[in-house]
Length: 354
Ligand SMILES: *Cc1c(COP(=O)(O)O)cnc(C)c1O
Image 1 (spheres, rainbow, N blue to C red):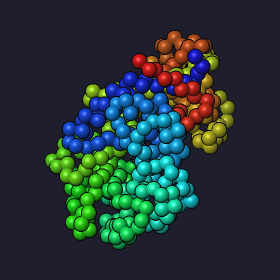
Image 2: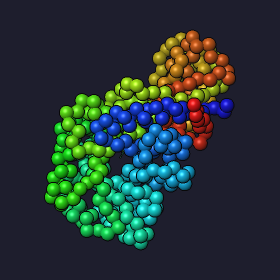
Image 3: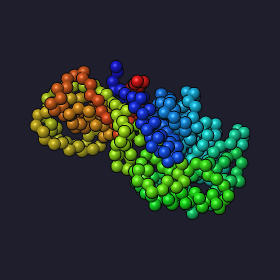
Image 4: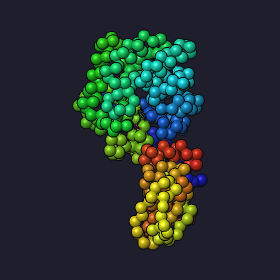
């Protein structure tokens, strides 16, 4: 098998997806599977489907097109505000889009009318994390106009936490969000079928909540793929944390001094690296680098230390591992490493089906 490769265990992903669907489903909350980390990889989207997840969300319209063209039947949600220059594809390929700008919604409305379609709109509400969202006090005006626009229907409201500002979805925040939904429904005499309350960072809230309120949808990516909640990156009980594994190969193994020899300036990445004097150590170099993966997000699965890396080389203190040229080393990946490995054309993706 060619290396570096990313081994993807589909049954483990299916298990995680099913388990999460049950955990949230108990409270009437539907899980939207978020596929942006895998670029809408059809094997993975199919696996989510098999686990009973019928709503798939992605930030990239290209990923949604990829999944649709692979014939995966789902409700597709564009979870990043559409580009006003790209509304045609959004109306064509997404059933629902998340929105924060009325000018974009007007463009979606025009395009939907032209295409003879009804496009569903979820308005994102800014609840304090200070990434995307409409400030609660500005919602009235926007809703009033959305309700008047033809070709679009207001499907619901969404909130996002712990993405930019790291703001936690506390019970107080969640209550506030539900209250907003109810106030707006009453004021405009409407029903909002979808209330999307957050992402993998909402897991601790789910465990400790005193009220679910109106939340009936949650958008999960990292929890499904890596089996963790994302406020503290704590493993979720009963889920696999190792559905993905990155494997790389030893291309050099030599005993060398641990300290550089010579006058030291900046390295290839403009950093001035600091090295600890470990004396003469067994060093293994892997054929893996920053062109393949975000090396800071890797954890080796054997007793070795990552000393650093460049575009094409990862340097290990091989310790007592007994590694030799040609041996393979497996790594656990965090979300950032997973994202980069999925994206790299140099990393071969290998799917385990059973
Ligand atoms: C990426 C994303 C999610 C999923 O986040 P996870 O931490 O992977 O669960 C949810 N909502 C929005 C708007 C996103 O962009």
